[in-house]
Length: 162
Image 1 (cartoon, rainbow, N blue to C red):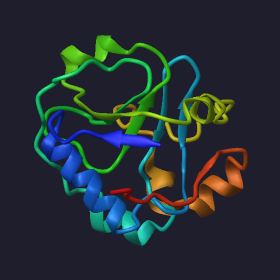
Image 2: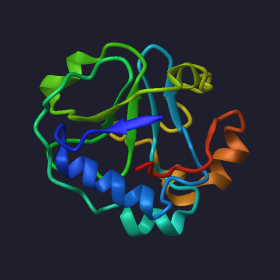
Image 3: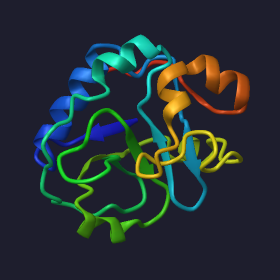
Image 4: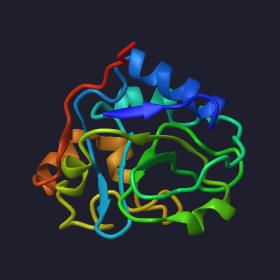
């Protein structure tokens, strides 16, 4: 269970809310799990949905809390480039604070599940946005990931608890 705190990153929290309400994350994959670093998700299984959201960047939020273990933060390639991909810090990643990575919340239950996500593919299944290795994931979605990286864990459904 993730708790998003709007006061930490209002633009990021609002985007996350809209994505969850739209079913954006449903049936997606944790496409980049790097043990000792992060578990990343946020590319939908359907490439048609990716095309709608891929270039809809939001302005940055200031960093109001540190990227410690269990925080959830948007991935980005530079200033004002956050779109839909997020990561959960598996360790203390406070070194990311000075790079502008603003957490929107934290895992409040189930960190053991996050720790158990399959990380055997490392950077090969969904490489970082900055590395430019996501082309096939973005273009082919789950068809590509399920064929070439069948061990990836699935995000079945995301929903809001009020």
